[in-house]
Amino acid sequence: MYRVAKEIMISATHRVREHQGGCERIHGHNWKIIVTVGAEQLNEMGMVIDFKDLKKAMHKIIMPMDHNDINTYPPFDIINPTSENLCKYIFDEMSNELNDKRMKVIKVKVFETDTSFASYSI
Ligand SMILES: [Zn+2]
Image 1 (tube, rainbow, N blue to C red):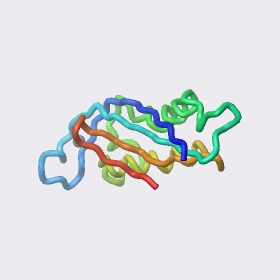
Image 2: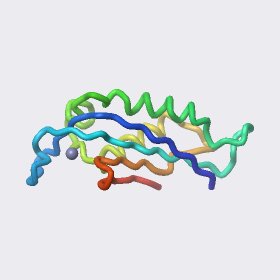
Image 3: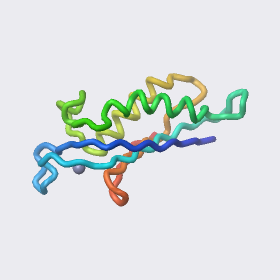
Image 4: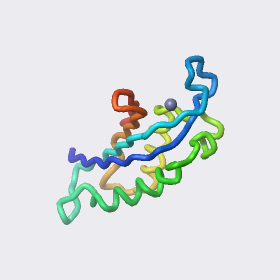
C-alpha cells in the first residue's frame, strides 16, 4: 500500500478529568498531529492524495482546537481529551471528510510532547 502523511501543530490547553497526577489541572501543550492516508491505487496524477487537499481537511478538523481549551470543544466537553481520544476523534472525522473509496485514513498520531504520543490506526 502507498502511504502519505502530513503533520500539523496546534497550541491548546486541556485537563484530564479524574487524573491523580497533576494532569487534572488545566495546562497546555504544543500538540503535533500526524495523519497518514493510504491507497492501493494512485490517482491519475500518481498520488495517494494531494498534500494540499490533506492539509485542507486536517485544518478543517483540527484547527478549531488551536488556541482553545480542548475541554470546551465537543465531544471533549464530555469525553476526556486524552491523546488517545484525540487520535480516534481525528481519525473518524478525517475518514468522513476524505470519504473516498480509493484511499483511506490509516493512522493518526498525536504528540503531547516530543517523547509522549498516542496513535490510532487500522
Ligand atoms: Zn496534558
